[in-house]
Length: 270
Image (cartoon, rainbow, N blue to C red; front, side, top):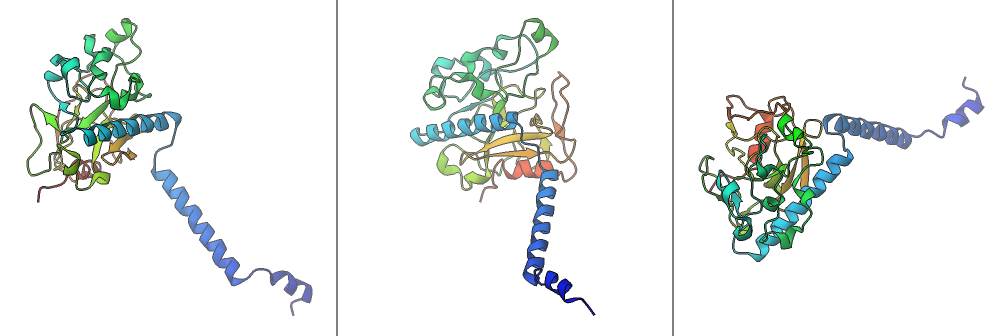
């Protein structure tokens, strides 16, 4: 027989209490799982997200007030084009040499884009990107001017190396799903050169390598101006900085990282 005083103590724990306890435990498991599978949010991540968010807002404001989106120059023209008369969002060729483009702020202060973005040159570079080559460091350089690049399917000028059958975006109205299509991202220091990021919408090739500055993650600004930081699942995209030039890679297997990237680069034409 259970003593009466013990029964009284047990009456406070009901079935509702048990359900609440189980629900709390389940929530804690979900939170722990999510934290384990995502990147750690550091001050640098927050600053990078804010940079790209502001770039995205400026780009969208420009697109709303002009017939065409800010132009996205590729190849040698990105270095030789005159910033004063340019309609591009950025110019310049970034590499590991001591060429002037690496520190020339006029290449990221395009007069046609300045009314939308302002004069803060820090907006074009991830605060984590402090990589310079030995030759550059000997000149006293602390960083190069630009970490960020624009999706090669967004108002690209000159040579288009991406496969056909996918939407090329020239105006804001071309985006059928702006919240699912990225405009800006950060590129790996070995891969960056012109202001263009060629993301293969078919997922078969890696033309340009995205950055992994944030503990294996890269930040993206989408056409609706929201930002996301994606942590790469495998080592194919989490490459160390080797201070060499990245070469195109053909992919023969189904890669979840490239699938994520390709699905957000464009949509198939209908």
